[in-house]
Length: 153
Image (cartoon, rainbow, N blue to C red; front, side):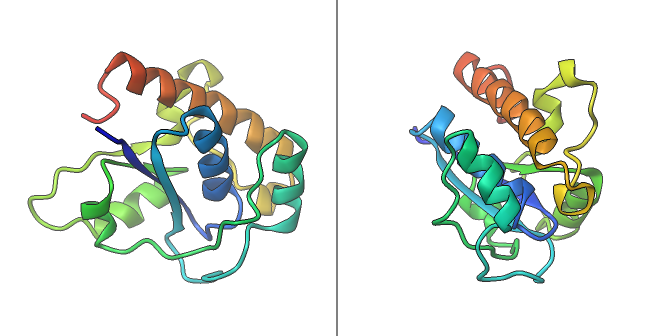
C-alpha cells in the first residue's frame, strides 16, 4: 500500500514545501504533496531563501508550486500534517462529517525537540532552524510509518 501524505502550512511557500521535499527524499515510496491554508501564493514556487537553504542540504524544491488546501484533500490522502495549531484548526474546520483521516501536528513526530510547532521562517528568517526541525520530524514520521506505530491512526 502506498502512503499518501499532505503537508500543510499557512502560505505553502516555506514550511510545507520544505517538509514535502525532505520527506520525499527520506521515503520516496510515499506519495507526498503540500498545501497552504491561505490562497496568498497559489501557483508560486517556494520562497527563494527557503529553496536556497533546502538546496544547500540536498533538497530540491524547485518543481513545487503553492496550492490551497481543499476539502477534497481529506479524500486524497491517508495522513494530513499541519505545521502549527492555526494550520490544524483551519484544516479541521473543513473536515467533512464522518471523515476520519488523521490530521497531526508535524512536531508530534519530534517529541525530543520540545517544539509544539514548526516556526514560520518567512517571519522568523531562520530557514536553517526550520529545516533542522523539519528533518527531525520527517525522520520521526518515517520511523512511525515503518514501525506501524500509529502514524495513520
